[in-house]
Image 1 (cartoon, rainbow, N blue to C red):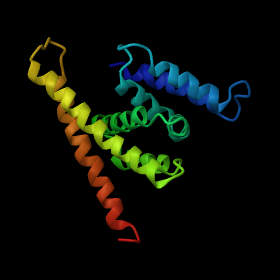
Image 2 (image 1 turned 90 degrees about the vertical axis):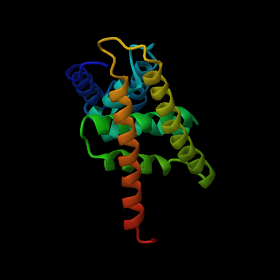
Image 3 (image 1 turned 60 degrees about the horizontal axis):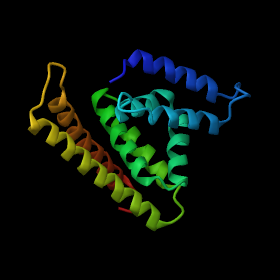
Image 4 (image 1 turned 180 degrees about the vertical axis):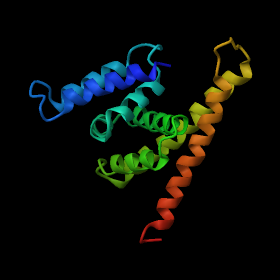
Length: 176
């Protein structure tokens, strides 16, 4: 995992590039930069990418995720949602932020079928990532720095809290 202060400085730089004063950089340039950072090999974990998106603010996070939605990258987008929830859980951010971001992204999809497919991908991503972390814990190949059990613990809590926020939103909606 990357140092949080380094990610914060990178996020601040992205906000400067994305801001209204930055005339040389378009939103697409910043989204492409964030996307390029996320494909750097294994050293750059999905958790770091999610943390960077959170630290970069709603505008950059939404633009990055909406771009994935528009381009049909729903599996990658779903994994991003899972890791946003994980970072919210680990770093004690409000989980309703991740749920509301997912709601905003759902509005990007043009049809109910696309939204349903995306939401199914989010659920499948939670399941796959939990199973992969569980395999890592069970395999027992741990070193001194291994935190696979703690990551699994946080992910299971993240999933529970994420779904709790969805239930709260559902119960508080006027159509319920």
